[in-house]
Image 1 (cartoon, rainbow, N blue to C red):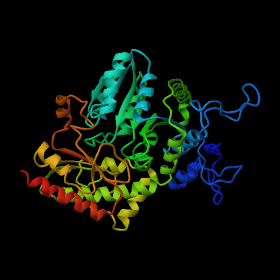
Image 2: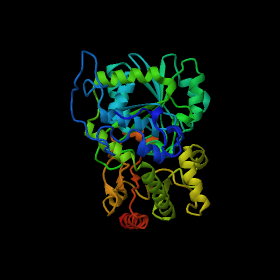
Image 3: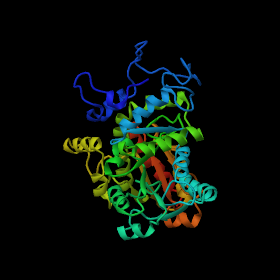
Image 4: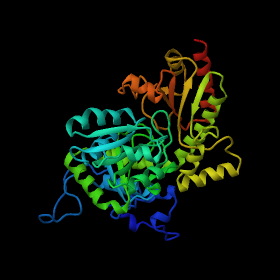
Length: 431
């Protein structure tokens, strides 16, 4: 079994895990060499059951749904990567993670959600939880709602406030610290959950901003190689009882990841800091190229200096991302903005026809759903990831026919910029 977080220290500095750098934690926490063989990389433990020396006497594992060496090790890694985290729970998908959280609220509960929420989350809230457990959800614009509007939306039975920041796909930026402060002084004391998938633990640390729970679709940046479907929750130390409740549901519902998937995702997490720096630097360059193009109506990338909430993006950077961004600026490697994750949305001039022409004209950006892999992807939210949201609601949210979402990979940046520019020219020719 991997050492606990409190046991991890650097052999050189003797620092505790929370004092180690992000990349150091990603590589070492949960990945101590095997005590029996000396193997540097953890083995894959495929056994579903474990020998007991006497009834109830075992080495920490009984049945693989309840606990597995690979999952336990990976959950240690997750808890260390999300700054302020102490409890990590891995699930078989991001949607399974969402379902478990919402089931934990119980019957007849109410929650508040950002209105521009991922389509799969919206579907579960409105078509599953609403039907099966009577969960009511109030969708509001958390980017622009003031404190009074948020307070007015909270009811006596409000258990949770669901935040995405940036939102998917319009990249609205939400002030997590403000939302958390309002929630925590309200008599209903709703928990604040932040879906941190788009920024990853590298660029954002919601727990340090006051959030109670962080959710990730690990399928995306944490794994980073488009070969695992998985989700996770991370909670701070003061929420140990809540973590225990969620762990009970994790076992009881059984939506747990396989040992092999945990092994793959833990391997991916080891390079998260390197990949996120490249994703961010490339995305800034692509966003600036889009901003220069006469074929683009609007570019949405909070790292751009021209973005109306660029100041909030900078203020909300995690401590490790801030260090990276400041070094880039100091050395003249970042002008006109700063790296802020790898996701860009933009509105192409024209409509559905031009958007589809762009998407079918790229050579390096693959037309596909999902995001966060090393390869660049592009998609049409209105007809793909957010097709489950009613058309009238999509229009209100700005998910229009000319909106395109890019997941900028880690290829050579000049190649990506050229690919976007030539696809824009192809789309413009159809006007």
